[in-house]
Amino acid sequence: MINKLVTRIKDLNAPVVVGLDPKLSFIPDHIKADAFAKHGENLKGASEAVFEFNRQIIDKIYDIVPAVKPQIAMYEQFGVEGMIAFKKTVDYAKDMGLIVIGDIKRGDIGSTSEAYADGHIGSVLVGKSVCHGFDEDFVTVNPYLGSDGIEPFIQVAKVEKKGLFILVKTSNPSSGELQDKVSDGFPIYEHVAMMVDAWASEHMGKEYSNIGAVCGATYPEIGMRLRMLMPKSYILVPGYGAQGASARDLLGFFNDDGYGAIVNSSRGIIAAYQQENYETFGEADFANASRQAAIDMIQDINWALGH
Amino acid sequence: MINKLVTRIKDLNAPVVVGLDPKLSFIPDHIKADAFAKHGENLKGASEAVFEFNRQIIDKIYDIVPAVKPQIAMYEQFGVEGMIAFKKTVDYAKDMGLIVIGDIKRGDIGSTSEAYADGHIGSVLVGKSVCHGFDEDFVTVNPYLGSDGIEPFIQVAKVEKKGLFILVKTSNPSSGELQDKVSDGFPIYEHVAMMVDAWASEHMGKEYSNIGAVCGATYPEIGMRLRMLMPKSYILVPGYGAQGASARDLLGFFNDDGYGAIVNSSRGIIAAYQQENYETFGEADFANASRQAAIDMIQDINWALGH
Image (cartoon, rainbow over all chains, first blue to last red; front, side, top):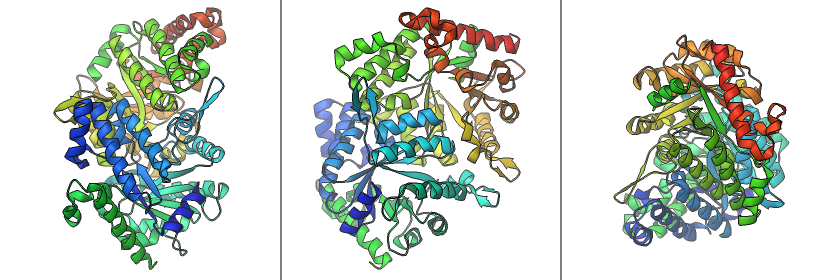
């Protein structure tokens, strides 16, 4: 799957992923009104609005970005109905040719991680039928439980030819409370990075590995260091735009070949029409505002990279 | 919610939670055959079998144990249909008077953790309607992202009068790879324990706090140390039985008052009929095998506690 992602990034000249994290407050009133009129002001109404919002954005970005990253929490908040919207979003994005990174940050003890892996990037056997649960292309994984919580994801990814991004250093302000703690001379995030690099070496695609990492754009110096520690891993970089990082902050996350990182923006793209730069599009044309914001983000990053 | 849990534990004299982690291989053939005949060998068939299995077990244990802990991964593996079975299990268990601990191990950056918290122990506003997603009583939370990933859960728990169990030291063999790393003179799990204790002090019920911790029974010496570091937190203890810990290993997780810990068993209870001790019940009477296994576990722990 990493080969497909790298090829798409090269073809589109766009090391960018759009985070589909649809809060209700991002969704234009006319979409909510339609959904609530059909289904009521309830979880089903909310979830239908979420999917319709995503669908219209996907229709305007599928030809310019390689991937989308639905944040499952934003669906899970609407219960079972939200999970239906998540699944419809995954399927629709894949139908439109996008690679789907499920931002699920799961992680548990071995047999339980296996169930998560089966549900999100693998399959389950029901009687004699092989059935697929959510069926994303990549997922994000939390490493707090150690290697026996991660290895089931790696095994499933290997069998299904899919990929992972393992949390190394997250973009939030308090990420350092545990991740930066120094032990045996290295911060915890470097210990995780060394584990990721070992797995990455064993699960190579052509140029990059199917085992990637997550490092927040909000910590550019750490990004440079992690880039060196995990040369074969793609780095999924959240934190650009709304969370405060600029294109220049991203340079250290890329390898000298100009690849090796994919930068996420969520709010900055999907809620672009609510921002000063794009407000002339208006609420009715929100999806074209998102398209323009994606184009601008790609240009901004390519400018910084000298592409 | 912790007051309700402690009261139930005292009334039943049973510091025990039954883990509802239904692998298909645990479910008797007649239940699977019925579900597959109705719905097919597909995700819906699997999920109906899972719920029916849970329902029959709940009917046989609701009067002897205070709580159940569905492990969401075991439902999530069946995609949307599995999430329906999860929700039906949560609702049915609550209807039968059980307290429900959602073993979800979620954790993310602030706004995303808020969405998880809203979905699992809180509510969302859809138009003018307050809607509840999964609506468990407690959830487990992963601390790798630091305090700003946990505080939204605490805020929601406070408003909704619910509770948390934060992962401190997990029961799996490789839990030490990150959790045992020593920094500033203390292992990471103690740093987390100190954070948990600070939150616990701020969110007290009567005798115990609504902010609890998870510590694996498989590390009894660590359990004793964590018991001292977090005197006000209930400790959710996985790892008894199938994972290898005995009742004697559990003593250090309890306070001198004989309370302060709740011990989980999953496979050991729900798949009891597959074990030598309970095989005389037979597959048809699997639920009574589970009841007997729960009775035996409660006796075993109370014997060790001298209750």
